[in-house]
Length: 180
Image 1 (cartoon, one colour):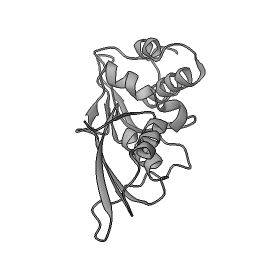
Image 2 (cartoon, rainbow, N blue to C red; image 1 turned 180 degrees about the vertical axis):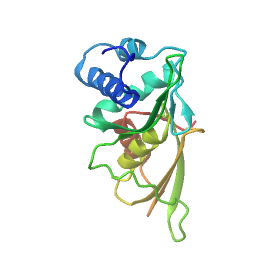
Image 3 (cartoon, rainbow, N blue to C red; image 1 turned 90 degrees about the vertical axis):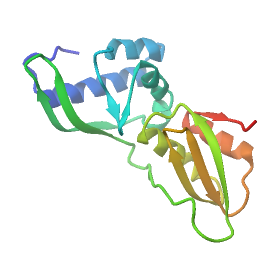
Image 4 (cartoon, rainbow, N blue to C red; image 1 turned 60 degrees about the vertical axis):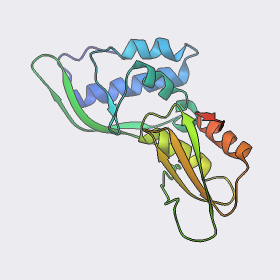
């Protein structure tokens, strides 16, 4: 990747994210090593309002292969300051077929609502990946994800088999934490 100096900030950021994504997708190298090439402690990255430190970025890479084998970075605004820093507002687009809907889990009627603990979620994209997988379970009528608390509430027509919920969460690339 070429250095920032003299490059349009929007292009630099888009290229940076595309290069990072491509390395994660096409390399057998450990994700931590790749993250270390792109992330330094002085870079503040915020995804959907959540500060992404090194550990969160590494955890965030786990579901990338499944959930975002292709994608693009849309940079809406990018500005360079006099110290060589960048400020940007942009979005990484999900794969085209991912619905990313959030249903209300507290709808009225004869439904079951269960809350589960899920580790590894760091932002709204993580929530969307988990939601997408859980919505494929027969009978699920709603999914509400709280990234901050690491909980997922699933509303369904009837009580769900916990093993089926676990498989869906793990398929999304996250860790299902059994109730104790």
